[in-house]
Image 1: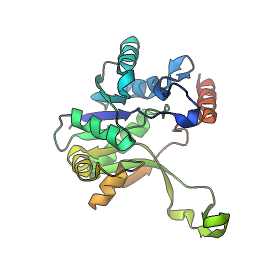
Image 2: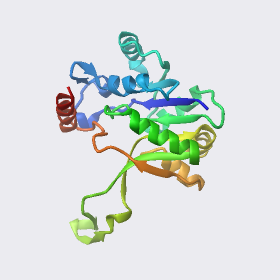
Image 3: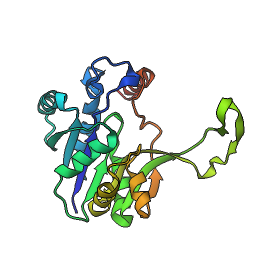
Image 4: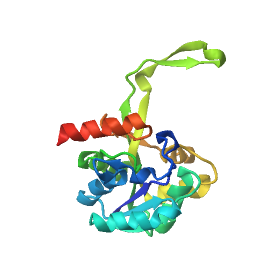
Length: 228
């Protein structure tokens, strides 16, 4: 049972005020943002190979980065689509896998991927077929109607914030994308849920942030400073 990773990194980074729309190559401590997730997968004793998904115009730049940093597990770099869903679908089409192989999908903009997180979500996917990382919601959540009027306070005891990586048996995630690829979702487990399949959640890591706005990049730099 092999573990194959897909790293969608074809986002435009508009919320980063990034004029080149090359978010995966934004510098984080003198290295491209995408390096950190790929490096974690490279070091992992569980992951066999990696498919990287970037904008078509940045494929050459991505290959140069892969070569420069010796990321030997990256066996394919494929062009992304107009949405995250299309990008992941392109990555899945590149993979030849057995139905019980595990497909690990991780946002390239989450630089703090740990071996513990990889192992937790992969182990659960091997047992149950589909699993994601997440952290319990600790903030007070309000339901708000039009005009900014609060309708009520949501019970947060059953609320979790989804993270990546998310892991699925290949047969399950392939069927989900074949059926729902023309729709859209902000994470992959949403499609598996629509199939009626059970998805388990395992505890993630608060440090596993997604770099979306400039403040996130500053926070990521601070985390690296603390860890160095």
